[in-house]
Length: 144
Image 1 (cartoon, helix red, strand yellow):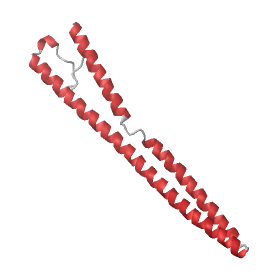
Image 2 (spheres, helix red, strand yellow; image 1 turned 90 degrees about the vertical axis):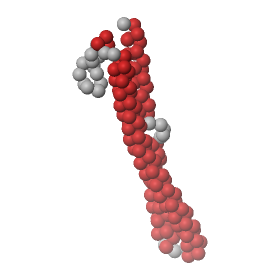
Image 3 (cartoon, one colour; image 1 turned 180 degrees about the horizontal axis):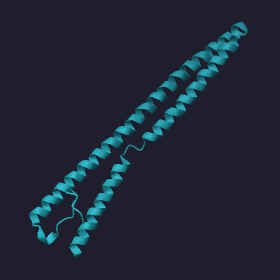
Image 4 (tube, one colour; image 1 turned 45 degrees about the horizontal axis):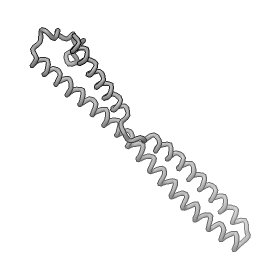
């Protein structure tokens, strides 16, 4: 088994004192915990960016939908009041606004899905694998 900190082969357990073994295990554990925390932090930052972008796109889609409702109301007023080709232009604008709102809402939903679940999955999986490896190494040492 290799020494994680030095990168070289580990000295046989019989050649090292108990204090040295405990110190080395403590150092390795500290390094491992720091690495796992850094991984979790990076993963949460990435998901936070996607959540922010998705929320902004949802909000933009909602604003455009609100303008679309206003345009639809204005179109109905013009149609009822004038019965002139002006209503056709207003109706076309209404359709364009609703289409843009739909596209923004779909893009926002896609970004929100990329941001969930909130848990740092990679970091949790890596930490579980590390714990399993340590358990396995302890069992192997206790058998020897």
